[in-house]
Image (cartoon, rainbow, N blue to C red; front, side, top):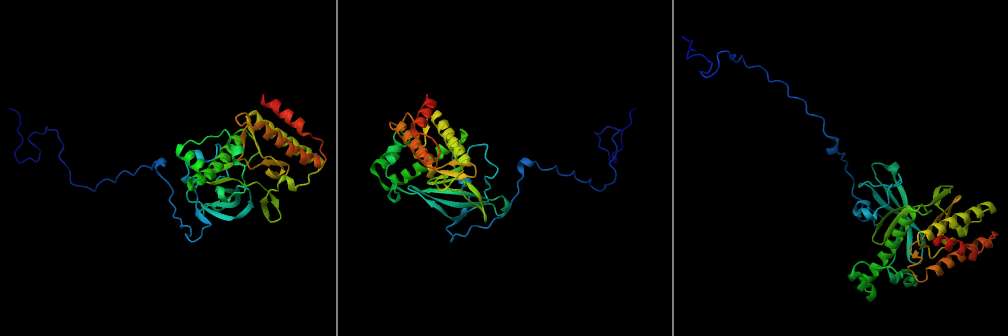
Length: 315
């Protein structure tokens, strides 16, 4: 006859006979250590002081507030500051122009002061404050996307004047990005935000540190350097023409001499060589302006020869 467990036994009547009896309660085992956090879900948090609201020359960096297509082309130079904690500080005006003023702007993250950068900030003025009155000649062939903006431009309303100023900034931005991608000697375009265009500050070494590179018109290069300068400009103009572009206002005043390197600036009026009815007239004028300056300093160059050489590159 099978053995029946005693009713007083602590084992359950339904439990198998070989089930071990529970022992005395002991200390709970140590919990397993938490796994290392996934680096993809971790970030460094740092508190920042708000820029002084009473100081109009300081603001949070606008890098994160502009859309991606309004930021400089990749790969970006390592000096571009993209930190959301960076602060923009105006350092004063560099020069005034017909349609815009250029300031120096420092962008630095206070947590990384050694990684700050000084840029050129070009701020376009509205039409009533500009001294440049030949805009229609350069904008021929351009279009405005929104019909509301087109109507405002035609009426020359307050909104229309704001749209016009922003269009000049966007026009120069687009030209800089296009030229940079072509490998042309232009300042790197950092970002555009409304009527403000931030770009690389072109410098030379000065007695007290970096200073703005002089315009070509203010230099007196030796004969060898003079010839090298002309060749640089000729190559830059040829590259633009091959891509269907004409500077439109090229002169020794729109070229910076950064040591032995020339940098072309002031590109808002860039025109389409074919799309603009006066494209070839602008090209000839650029050739004349350039050659006149170089010839006056002893270099044997001819505007018609340069023009013919460039036209050959266009076709």
